[in-house]
Image 1 (cartoon, rainbow, N blue to C red):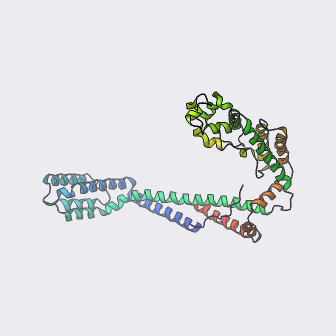
Image 2 (cartoon, rainbow, N blue to C red):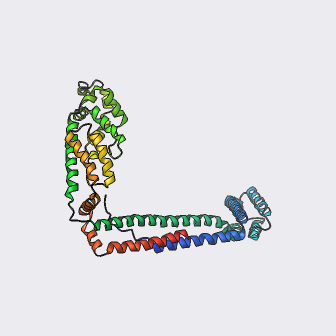
Image 3 (cartoon, helix red, strand yellow):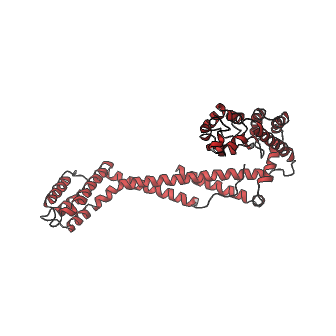
Length: 378
């Protein structure tokens, strides 16, 4: 475990987050009210009409102006007039489309006529923009709510860290922590020595089978052997060699390798590609290290007894078995808190505990959490 020293970042501040959420919601509501004033269907009709008018402007402006393509000129006038005539009488800003039609209903159309036509439907365009603005406002609200939620999560994490700091600050530093650390260190040293000896002598097939069995022991965190590597050592005589020999074979040239393994091709396509995995096989997943919580140590010790018993002597297994008794001590939690406090509390954290900074930060974060939760719920 570790105790963080970093406070929750101050930027953006809770006030900024709340203000952004409030403004985003107000914008969304204002746009929704404006759409409701026109009616959803009417706004959509205006948007469709503006989109079609803009498409016609963009398509024909170059070809239908001045001395351009006469056929294009006729097509544009016909299609635009048809668009305007087909608009519902009650369509908001319909008169703007009529003005636009008048602007381009000329014997010849100039660029200024197109410009006047575009300007004539500009207010209709503002109505059409309400749909995009509503979507953008919804996204803004989603982003603001997400930012508040992320801030709340950060606050919760920091409050948990501060609670742990306060708990460790109350630890009895005069407690006999060696009664906890020494049995664990004795076991860790013994299992490292036993495992290293086992790796030196055991067939790599047996070693990988041992590691494969740890899939049944979730607290023993070995990486499982690659399936093709496991299949190889199970089915080839090279699997009867110890790990160091197998790794030395991986350094041989093809011609030299043929004198040591019966199927050099199978070896070369399987073992060298997993060299990194084989190099990293070690005893650490079987060690305890810093004292874990009592329940975890009890379960871990049971798993260790089962696994370590497959390769180590009875003395090492007995040390693993003793860990279960250690976790059952009535004063285990008190001793563990003292160990963690000794090893993990920095001087800066100790000073912050002494002068009240930790409690002050926790109080400020609780108040901030309340403001953010209220803002999110409203």
